[in-house]
Length: 280
Image (cartoon, rainbow, N blue to C red):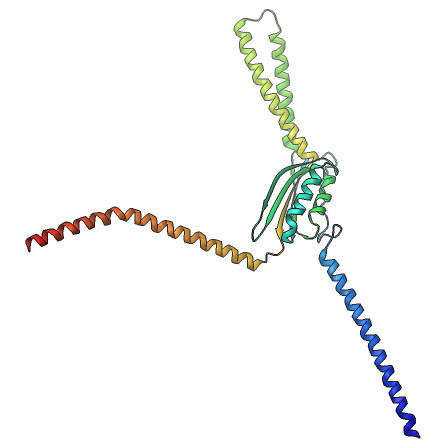
């Protein structure tokens, strides 16, 4: 009877152990699926999670006169480059974010697609444009430089003031009634030159203010599918093609240079052979 009581207990314990093991395996599987889902979401990326902190626009403070320029390189899947570039361009041209103008745009396809977009925008627009460009990818490199335009602005201001004073004095002289005709002609020509120089100085001042009040942003889009090794192989293949082209061109040039000599030697050999035959 003792043995009969033990057998059901053993079977019961075995069944409970199997149920506990199944529950444990199920929990581990759920944890692994959750981890895989989180990793997939992190890999997919999003508009709010570029790989690097956003690029801040450069704002002049304390009377400084700096012209800020930003260089940002991005790595994206090949199929996202054209779309992201177009979204940044449309956001800039739409003026919804602020003052922004597209200066230059390039896009190339093929085995290693790439693109670039250069814009001039208000400092507050720069972070939004960079964030939009990095959707689904990462910022691989960035740099910010600033050129001090204080001396250039001062010199151009002094030049403008001097030209205005000269123009005012000459205008007063021209307005006099006792001025001679030949002097009037010479002064009129000088006034015309001063007006041209003034226009140039005013345009330069406007360009300086544009550079101070806005930032120059250059976005470079590169494919993340291209590794260093594959890029080196592609460059080697392209270099080999260039070497073959150069070698073929050199051979053709050499043959072209030697062709007259070969023809002359052929004619001389033919004449010598006929003369020998006649003697024989």
